[in-house]
Amino acid sequence: MRAPPLATMETALRIQFWGVRGSISCAYPDFLEYGGNTSCIELEILGQTIILDAGTGLPWLGNDLLKRGVTDVHLLMSHFHNDHTNGFNYFKHIYIPEHTVRIRAALNYGDLTVEDLIRQQLSENLHPVQYEHLPSTLESIGFHAGDTFDLFEGVHIKTYMLTHPAGSTCYRIESEGKVLVYATDTEHTPGQTDEGLVEMMRGADLVIYDCTYTEEELPSKLGWGHSTWNEGVRLCKLAGAKRMAMFHYSPDHNDDAVRALELEAQAEWDGVFAAKEGMVIKL
Ligand SMILES: [Zn+2]
Ligand SMILES: [Zn+2]
Image (cartoon, rainbow, N blue to C red):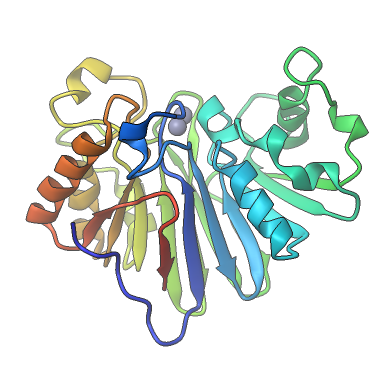
């Protein structure tokens, strides 16, 4: 396996993977090389912390942030399927006064607000502690997929709705001349190009892409909302993206399977690598 890309001299954006698995966490030894936790990525930009998704990697990121004294974070949600939310209730920041979590997600659930979705997550049938008892500050801000906004000064974000049951939001995060694209939970139609997604990926330094299935598996999973490394690489080449991190591996793919897919992908394009839990990338 090739080494992850090297850091440049000036780091504008630090990325750390805390969960790379799709669908469900995999707590078995043959998943430990790439990692068994579900979607959670930490970004450090201009001294602030942005988290992409609240999968089972989030509690472990949270513990690390507490050790580092980080009390305020921005959380960008792709969507609210379980594998992207399961870590939220065990993110210690939400139980500590004077800690702040600013949550952004697309308003894509009828009349439900982002706060409604978080409240559901903490409802009494699902969790012992309810939203109204949390002593932290939780801010929930909805947007419409397709919107662009400045998350804070120096960080510009473009959003786009991916093809996924109940939708999933793609984020293009631009800061200090660097571009990161988070595109997970998206289904492609073979032979058709998602032109909007190509525009989101245009010239990106790194694209994190849904590589749940193989091309052989895809026909039996139509409508499940996922893609392949082959399509990710194809889109990255069309968009002139520099590198792609394979992400959101199927729980049916253990380390041997992911390693084989990574080697196949790298034979096709040397810009691709498989994301691993703990991996740090600096742009
Ligand atoms: Zn997912
Ligand atoms: Zn999903």
